[in-house]
Image (tube, rainbow, N blue to C red):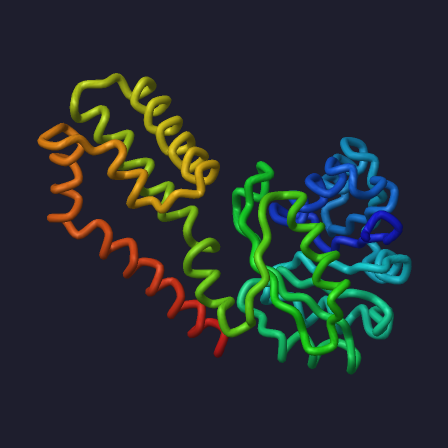
Length: 271
């Protein structure tokens, strides 16, 4: 669907460049149909030389030539960027925003009436092609628009479609989630050191255990509780450790962390 479309990425920072690299390497679209913009000339030259995409510091020029415009700028400068583009973003173009917390109502107020808008929330692992992205569609977006947006974000991981009212929960779970996982990983490594392993050995074992367990859970499709039971023998080592995790309310702490991140997302969205 996007093979014949020209896609402009306004902003080639961490997430913008991750999306550009994923799409350029996906085979879904010729890299020459991708336009990257950024105020940092060096970053543009690097990504153009590496991937064969087109690069320019002129946002208006990129938008004028694009069928799909992906806005990858920070929320605090989004309004200014869209205002400078003026009527270059016509209703004929699909606009995708990854600006965290910027609601559809705000995007619609900054774009021409009837604009086809998709709001997306990708996360950090998109940089290594293992991202989790949720998208929601504006009232004037068509089914084909949603499908094209999914193709873009599927190039860097997996994509789900949600209602906009669920986007704060997405932020709390998959948006903030990598930080919670990193904290768990750090503690896991420290635990290995505590029980006598060299830190480099503990790091390898902890990383691979976390990565492998997630991959195994994904491949089997089984409920995590069933997988946990398969590792847990009566009176064994695993149940002894699980009992401590339950006593320390680790499960409840993780749930509360996601709830707190979700509530904070709602607060920020209302500012």
